[in-house]
Length: 285
Image (cartoon, rainbow, N blue to C red; front, side):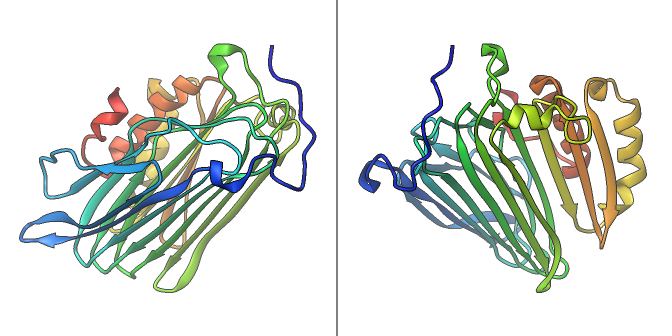
């Protein structure tokens, strides 16, 4: 049903000039009582659009006009908030990571949040196709009193097509610093038969979708009891395994599910409690 495995070559099978290399750079700042975009730079097939927001925050939607990424492609997103700025950044749709002929697909996000500023980084799902090779990183620098919420979701294969990740590679790297101090570091590596690895009881018990939510800022760690009650009692989490905890002043929530849509419904409910506003409209499409 799916393409046979290709031998992994140390050399790219396609030259660099046919691969996509681009991204978006954004800077937000306060203009009066509202946050506005102060700098916007776009390259390659990547674009940013700014829907009308009905509060003081600025909302940005990132678009990959190619509709997906393949081996050898690279996308870099840089987001900076000036003091006191408040912004929400999301994506237009799920990002698809197609089968690779040997090279990695690289997705890099670099964030700087100045004193008193607030950023919600809420990209939609990343869907890994069988044979994909993804290296993804999130590097965040926060001021001591900055607020930051991040949600990253991975779907392993296209469930509607009966696809599983019988081969592939994933390296997902997070580094978050507050006032120059490293407060959160994580590396997730899956290689080879990813579906078999996820099927192990101590790993994923057959999960096809996972999400990590990180929240730091005034009042976020204090929401732990509320969030744990939500995970235990709300019907949206009936098909989702989830847990929440706090450490070093931040709140961390993990979710996994056999059903990608069930996980998305639960994630929407969870984020609504954390960001205290409606999610960007692209999340409802």
